Length: 197
Image (cartoon, rainbow, N blue to C red):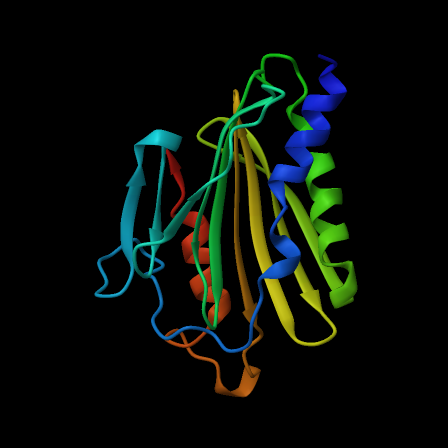
C-alpha cells in the first residue's frame, strides 16, 4: 500500500469531527491550570489508546468500525458535548510515521483537513505552532470564526499513533471574563493535561 494513502487517511482521521462541534456558551467549571484537584475536572486514563487527559466528566467513547483496508488498526473518539465541546480522537496505524520521517507531512495534511472542515464557519483568526509532547511532534492550532466560535486543538504523532484533541466554544465576553468562566483558560488546561502513557 502506498504511503500517500496512509497519510491521506491519517489527515481525515485527525479532524473528521472538527466542523461538527462548537456550540454556544462555555460549560461551568474550569480545570485547574496548575494541575490541582477539582470537583468537576478529573484525569482519565485510556490504556487501550495509551493516553491520559482531564475531562469534566466521563467522556462517551465511540469505537470506529474496523478499517477493511488495514490502514487504521484502531480508532476511537472520546467526547463530551454540551455548551462546550471537548474531544480526543485516537488512532493507531499500520505504519510508524515517525520512523518513516513522515510525521510532519501527516501533521500538515491534518491541519489542511481541519481547516477545510470549518471553512463554512468563516475562520478569521488563525495561529499555528509546531510543538513537541514527550518527544513526539505535533501542531497546536487556534482558530476563531466571525460568528464568535473558537477552536483550540492539537495533533500529536507518536510513532504509529495519532492523537487529535480539541475544544470548541463560544468566545467569552472580554469584559465579563475571569479565571472561573474563561473558556480559553479551560481549553488550554484541557490541552495541556494530555499525556502519552
